[in-house]
Length: 342
Ligand SMILES: NC(=O)c1ccc[n+]([C@@H]2O[C@H](COP(=O)([O-])OP(=O)(O)OC[C@H]3O[C@@H](n4cnc5c(N)ncnc54)[C@H](O)[C@@H]3O)[C@@H](O)[C@H]2O)c1
Ligand SMILES: O=c1ccn([C@@H]2O[C@H](COP(=O)(O)OP(=O)(O)O[C@H]3O[C@H](CO)[C@@H](O)[C@H](O)[C@H]3O)[C@@H](O)[C@H]2O)c(=O)[nH]1
Image 1 (tube, rainbow, N blue to C red):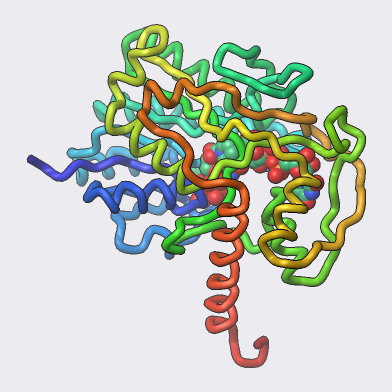
Image 2 (cartoon, rainbow, N blue to C red):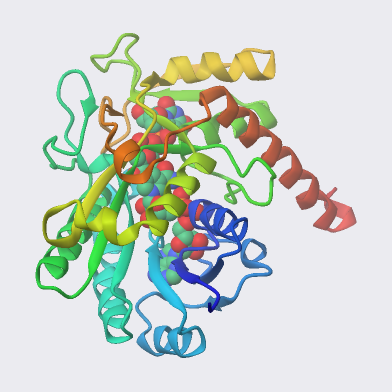
């Protein structure tokens, strides 16, 4: 049998690179397409790597000519910062929506008719208890989340037209790193809550709790923090039984929540961070960020039946692995810096 391969767009980024490692562990080859706008070239080392844009049809044609064994595409590439999307929505519609439409056209032209899409729990407008399942209303608050809901709609329409089969994984908030520390969060200045905590701890600055007047148990926002290694395993499971999973939804399109079912407030995340590091992190209260929702966490277990997958790691594991990765990355960064800057 020929070697099984999957194309991963955004495969040099945080989530795509972790999915790549999880596939490699099973002897499956990830083929990476990434423009390195936020990704890191070293995350694609040892993997077939094409540097370029997902909307570049010639490049996609070349990838399929050189890797005809590609069975499906995992589409992770995109821009991902919620508050940035409220300031510059056009960039988000272009990068996430317009380019996804182009990519899908190129995939179909090349006979790749299976797409696993990185969607987000931010597509939901949660109710008062913040718990959502796949039948909850899709009504995004931010332009970023709207681009994701729109790509889902594009994929659902293409599936209905018989062009392809698609599965959208609606991730909750990924944290952590590959436990073997092959990859982790590559951004030196991340914008998300745990990344900011780690940066604050390492630079001796205060963490800012952005939003302390939400209608939650302590006023800070609730999220469902899912370990990125668990998330990667969910992708492997979805790819292994792709046609079955896609067929579980209407006309060959299925959307699936990938979260732990545990809601954690920002203040609780701070407490867990202190428990892992052994010292409290100084913080101050700050206004809400634009585009934020008060809370969202998963209440669906559909993934169990469809993927045979469940999360294994908890929030503290995610914090620990993220800290281990960051310490390793800092050491490498320092070693690579010119002597004068060390
Ligand atoms: N990190 C999260 O909290 C989160 C949560 C839910 C969903 N998602 C989705 O998961 C996906 C991956 O997120 P991530 O956290 O790994 O982000 P990331 O920034 O680490 O990875 C995105 C990757 O896509 C690449 N890229 C961006 N635009 C591209 C283009 N036009 N052509 C080719 N490559 C391009 C970047 O260089 C980067 O390597 C995104 O689609 C994001 O919306 C992320
Ligand atoms: O320095 C910070 C950063 C964040 N927060 C708060 O923490 C909560 C979570 O924010 P963040 O970690 O940025 O996650 P989200 O805004 O939920 O967005 C992430 O999670 C979504 C899925 O829920 C993904 O789709 C997005 O790409 C990803 O950025 C929000 O209330 C933020 O205001 C702080 O209090 N201080």
